[in-house]
Image (cartoon, rainbow, N blue to C red; front, side, top):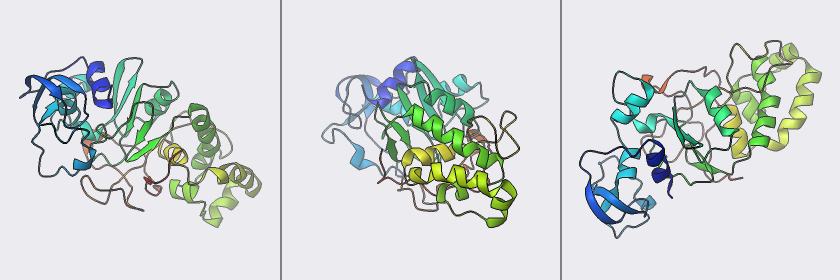
Length: 276
């Protein structure tokens, strides 16, 4: 099954306006469909290279659902007062349950990743159709396909959460370029100990995901030397719709529907060439 068909099944097979009975392959995911509609993409769509069957002429209902801009199904699932845009949210399927998660829900996202979901698509910019890029068995983090490793992610979070709680921002933690006064305030020896653990992780897509998941909250330690493994914020795409993530172009999602979050000191962009 493709990522979109897994999501469509978890959502209860919602019907999409314009879809009709049709037997044949999907232009986008390549799966054989029972329902679909002609593959007419909007002008903003740039992912033509993602088409699994460029010779086909129809989109399956699952792919149509994954790209909905005004989804009533998402609205109902969220209990919102208006239809939701699928690309604004992260989407996790855990034990058959669909979990659409906003940018503010880093704690829930982290918890779900530790439980080995069937599908995990983490929206950073909230501006890209990530579900059509996702691969079952991988964590799709913006444009990067990350090999799942819940144990390592948990170890990373346990190490970097105290630094974040202790006053360092996400850019410092991700790059290793710390402001000296913050090191002194935190404690040089404690900082050095944690840095020795962190240093080999830098450059790994999984580490960038861990930084993204950092979040200050009521359950996090505040003294700079403690705190539970936590979750957090990140995410701005300064490169436009459907374009490659640019270095330094990461920050908060502006769409109010995508939720809030604490976004001081965002890390650099998730880079497509780095895989685990």
